Image (cartoon, rainbow, N blue to C red):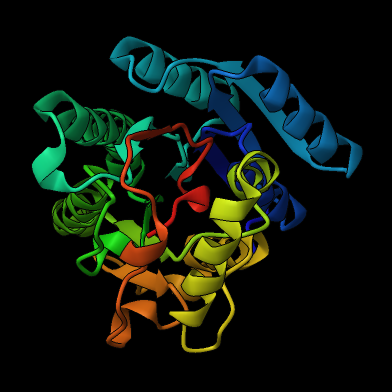
Length: 282
């Protein structure tokens, strides 16, 4: 499906990003991983190579404009094109306390950092793709980007901002043959953040996961494989006419009325560092 396409994946050493990278590589894409965790990047890279795929890894901060642009130019110089760009960078965010009790820095930091990395990576890739006359830019948000969801702090507004940005970018790049699509996930319980949370806070996380599953129409949350397969489809010629939209993979959560789980989340500040948005409640 993606034979000889060049895919740049930011946050590439994370659990979901790794799943996406392996899935695209399996379908013939050349994978260019980028992120801050060198060890994790190398692990994913070696897994892809051992499976017969092509992968390269670069350590960089996706909040650094020069680093992002220099890396993309290296990809173009070595591979010729940038066909797919997918930002899966995790952002530190403060949650589990009402908005009226948050400080301005706690609220704003998540939105600022999220939109900074999205803007830098998407526009840099977009400029290259416009010159090529083709390309696909993907982003990922969570349930709280589509509905009001309590106690998610600045993360919900950040997701909504990413979805709006994706649509506007699609409208500008579409005439040049570039597609821009966002994926909205309900959170993948098999991702690393959830696994780590289950080990450290099982009494808190188990009821949250149960409630999240109950909020879906199928009573199941999307796994990393589901998100990776969605990204694969959207990057392929099969989705050639899909752009400017958010593809909802919340298993129907945003389409039905449910009472969000405010009763099972303690009212305290909880700084959450995600390796990708796949581990985010909401």
